[in-house]
Image (cartoon, rainbow, N blue to C red; front, side, top):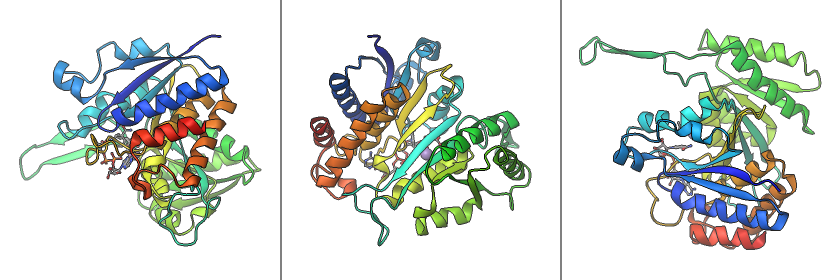
Length: 352
Ligand code: NAD
Ligand code: IPM
Ligand code: MN
């Protein structure tokens, strides 16, 4: 049996607390399903930046380019400006490894208190497909006349036909594979007059190839309102880098807590390693207390096993999460309980 080589970047803040729980459950799944995993731990993050002047070594990404996947906690700490830490580590990984799909499920679980009245498990169950390598996240722009009354900054968005079409194709394929076959596109072509009309055009062109998929599109402003009022209406939602980012915090929030939300930064062709990480960040407000919810990390581990071809093991982890949540035991504070990160991690391990 060939071992899967996984680069592990716990990163900053609660990343260091939830990653060990993710590994605990991955190792348990490995034992049960006979999957060999080897973990290559990297100390990359804000502490390394302070000590050595870089978030990661100069050749860091090349040292993991041949790995099978990357398992990441969170990046960012208040001592470092966020654009410095994130453009120093997370965003370069997504780009170097062409992880152009950021796949983020949204599900309401039995046992997790939902902030919306009258919603029950099963009502909310959809996928967000976020473009992950271009769009509003760009280095093009700059500052002029700094410190004067005329000071101005610009920030360009970049939408290429290649980049938009490939993420749309992924989203249409995903929608076509599901029962509801329903794709919602996030746009803002009423206010943003170049990129968003182009996005809509490409959606329309791609739709011709998928006659079985029902499509709708909403401007991002009303779409956020619909996420709260009618989350049961969504099946697959596709959005640009920034819109997808915003929607993928809102989605989990309407299902109770962002602490459970996972993500897969996918290079679907498998030319490069894909990366699996929770949607949330380093949570400086609760870091060091041992109370962070590890489910976003653990579920990300399940997505990683799924990506590596171990469907049964991935489903078993999700099943264990479901049963522990439904039991109401070992819930962390964000879900109304009082369990620690480690207690919840261990409960999922033993359920598995
Ligand atoms: P955050 O996700 O870190 O925290 C937002 C809120 O949610 C906080 O109140 C936090 O306590 C809570 N929360 C988050 N995860 C939780 C968990 N697992 N269990 C319980 N509560 C949880 O977002 P932020 O405060 O905007 O960002 C903090 C830092 O993290 C910043 O440096 C930011 O840039 C970075 N960040 C990194 C990533 C990433 O690495 N992918 C993602 C988002 C934010
Ligand atoms: C996420 C995060 C990142 C993003 C930040 C930290 C750069 O919010 O993964 O959702 O915007 O992509
Ligand atoms: Mn985000």
